[in-house]
Image (cartoon, rainbow, N blue to C red):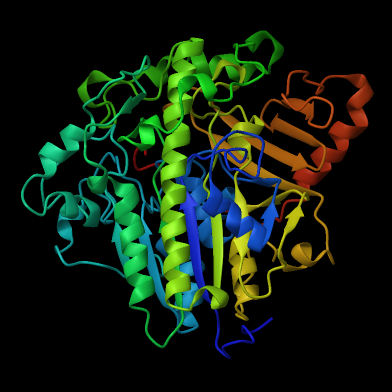
Amino acid sequence: MTVAPSTGRRPNVILISTDQQRGDCIGLDRRCVRTPHIDRIGRDGTRFAKCITPHPMCQPARASILTGKLPYSHGVRDNGRNLDAAIGELGLGGVFSGAGYDTRFIGKAHFSSNETFHPTGTPECYHSTADFPADWGGPYFGFRHVELMLRPHHHCTWKDAPYTLHYENFLDGDGMGRIRWSRAKEQVEPLSSHFQAWRSALEPGWHSTPWIGDRAIDLIENAHDKPFFAWVSFPDPHPPFLAPKPWADMYHPDEVDLPMHGVLDLDRRPWWHRAFLESPVRWNLKREHAEGGTNWGVTKPLSEQQLRDITAIYYGMISWVDDQVGRILSALERTSQLDNTVVVFISDHGEWLGDHGLLLKGPMLYDGLLRVPCLISGPLVPAGRTVTDPVSTVDLRQTLADLCGLEASGDSGRSLCPVMTGSESREFALNEWEVDASRSGIDMDLTTVRSDRYRMSVDLKTDTGELYDLQDDPDEMNNLFDDAGYASVRTEHLDMIRSRPDDKIPASTRVGWH
């Protein structure tokens, strides 16, 4: 696999990612979300129906996508632990920069912690970004040029320049940034019944979703002779869930899908479910993310109306991103570059969205949180194919290098090209998280394995766990971990966990919370 035969040069790559989008929240899956442009990537190429995240938190998951390494192999075992620059620079940006590509990162990176105890010297640190000149644009983790966001979500407090990055400078170009940031948090009618979701008063053009789309289109329209690699990273549909009209009204709360089992059922689960939810550490308000005394990470049991209101806006946020995907594909077509561009759509991790009465994310690796969208189109990618083997976003570094005829040093992933063609199959994919009591209230060595039929999560410190048969029990209601009849299945999946490469490194130092 070298170059696209129609042009005689290496293909471009556009890696489009979202934050906290469930794998079933695209039109090609089971929910009623309308995503015609994302679906087009799958129809023109290959969709991986059982792709999982290597970690259910933003920062480790993104570090894994970048480096192709599992979290215990790159050291970012939780949010608030920075990726070592030397490791990160060997990731996707470094591989493609080294091959002569014009490498860009646009949007939310989160390769370094934002909310830190002390300045860390990175541009994404609230306390350190002022150390970088106003015209700084990279390099960063192997990408030659970046346009980033310091505050990608609206639970963060606004600060004026120089404590800003590219998106904040866009908002504040006429000195109105603080006003616009506050306006985004104003609700317009009809009012939502839950504090995590609302219709935003800020005009659509000032939100990050179209800003990121505009930056990507500008790159496409001004591409030069060399091929480009662009990671286009949308921060939505991460909470708090908000969008302006018309996107916030695109789905009526009465029409959205609700989980089959939306009630907390902690007595049927391993010990850590209850311990995590009831930990007083999660009520800590002494954090910048708790603006105005609101604890955005803790919610009470959801009523049906609250879940409907949240889900309707969550769906609208996804459809708004899909609209930008359509604009990006149109720009590639308009400039005659689509046939020589590999396009990937993924998310860093999913969202509970009411599954088992839960909202947001944590150490309960239900399918809604574990599974993410993964669709790839472009030269040498089989069209109209759906792969049901379990794979991981860790595999993307090797896959994209393979599709572009590049050599990438070894990592935790393997190229998905043989899986796309059917010449190779995959038995399982892994997820791992060192759950930290200082941040989550409990200590765990939590490893999850997703096979074709089962999902098993084990705390390797206590040898306790949960095992679900996703064929017969897709809603993960019956925990079979201690069922004697499934002892051989449990042993088989423990062997999968133990087959992990012996390349773990120490956890990177905790520098903050997010």
